[in-house]
Image (tube, rainbow, N blue to C red; front, top):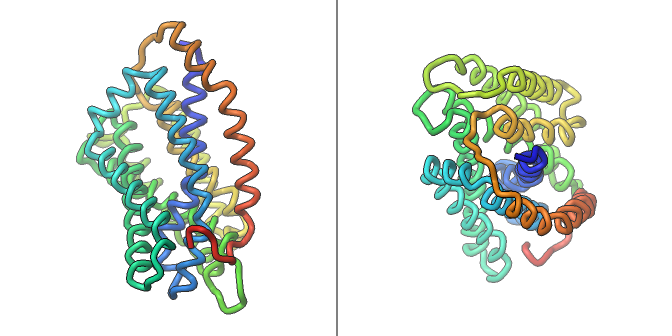
Length: 307
């Protein structure tokens, strides 16, 4: 198989985790960083429209998976279908809360939509954690590694969301949302650091990961621990924008580069068709995401279509 095809799939998956980790993570933290109606509105305004562009990367990854890796797609769907059902349900509930929040002018309606955003975000993070654990262990198993891996991925989502909120929630002097999010970066970095270390220690136990490239997995785990250790220090909040992105990219890289995943040769005509469809699209996605990220790094204070 052309080595560029696995690299493309890894790029799309890692891009989604890095980008969606920001809005999913901030949605998880809404009850903690936002204590009032106006603060919750600002959290939703910070998430939107950022979440729209990040989901494009997931759609692209699913398209590449179906077109170039049908055996792997079958393996994922048949082995992890309960987790995928939770992931899709969380995705639908979270997005419904974001889209519908500003459609009705009522405190109860907005509170219900905020609850949908929080519940959907937690469902997404936990489902992605179990998906990563299931792909690393060649199927979900009731083992210490599965639990610790899922919790670690959830902590990485929360860390990424806190780092994003520390930038996006800067606002009036009486708003402490950004300060709370910045302080949380150290908390979640330490939580993730401890959980990742325990998961690595539990790897040799029954139900541990089935790896095809142990040195690669060890190097990526070491890089993850370094990024989390840097974020755990006194300067962690200032570093978190970069270290949180590097940290949440590691689970995707572990699956792509070190997991023992099924594969088969794909007819060259199929590869030509998929690549011909993607070549004009991927650069547009990349440029558009860079532009949107630079725009959405600014504080979100004014009312928007979503909040």
